[in-house]
Image (cartoon, rainbow, N blue to C red; front, side, top):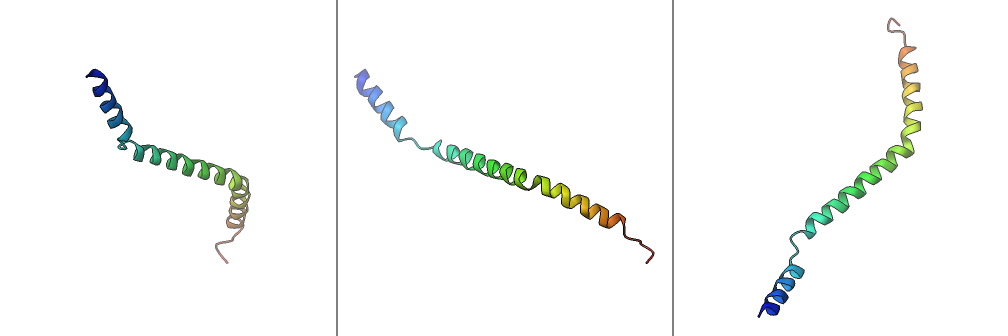
Length: 65
C-alpha cells in the first residue's frame, strides 16, 4: 500500500509543470542581461569617444553668433 502511494506521489510530482514557466523566465532574463552586457562592452569605448567629441563641439560653439 505504501509503495502505491509513493508511486502516485512521484507520478504527480513528475507531471506537475507549475514551476516550469518560472525556470523559462529566469533563463530568458539571464540571456537578455548577458546580451545587454555584451552590447555595452562592445560599444562602451566608442560611446566615450563620441561623447567627448560632442562635448568638445558643444563647448566650442559661441552663443553670441
